[in-house]
Length: 231
Image (cartoon, rainbow, N blue to C red; front, side, top):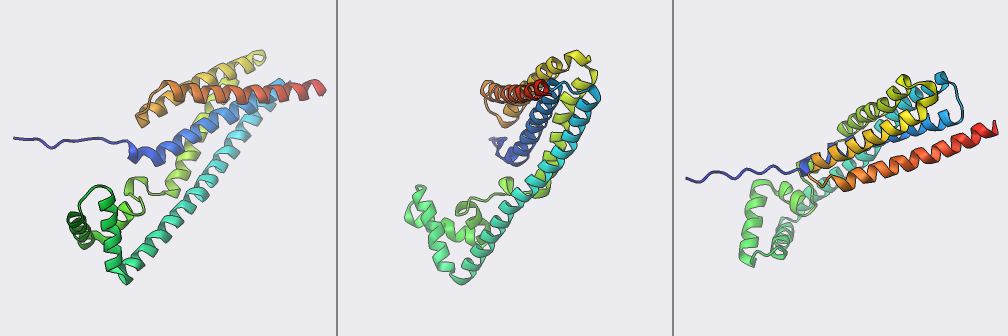
């Protein structure tokens, strides 16, 4: 007796995983960079923390708004494409059938089988068949603006809270090394977890996010030190 072969694919995670990683990464990098830059300018501990809190709130709102607008534009495009395709199916069903069959022929089916597959799929769900095979739209990759916005805002806040917490617990004279080292550790963990969730290798994503985070903090620290020396 044969058993059904069950497979778990990770492509359905693309939407929320991208928003989550982007939000957390931006939260860590931008907030840590702000803290390091302000601390390098010899700001007071209260000023450093105020900068971090302001960066967290502003960044979370900016991420939410940006993701919502961006993904809404994608959703609008998908909706318009589906409406146009539905109209074409209604107006020219034979041409749409031939178009769908042509896709299957190019994938390797013979002429008769391709037309039969296209006929059966269009009988069952014509728009769904064209959305999947002609437009490349699937439920797992469909644009979800609200989900993307909330995910980005939440993960940005979580990411930003990490270096901010380090700035709170660190001795005043050690705020910069505390924030830098802890943020690089957080970024490395984030890169590894994101790669694991997406089914990719761990080393390259981990190195990538860590290097860019270190570069951002180095630049803002240098700018902060320059302004601090100038003051």
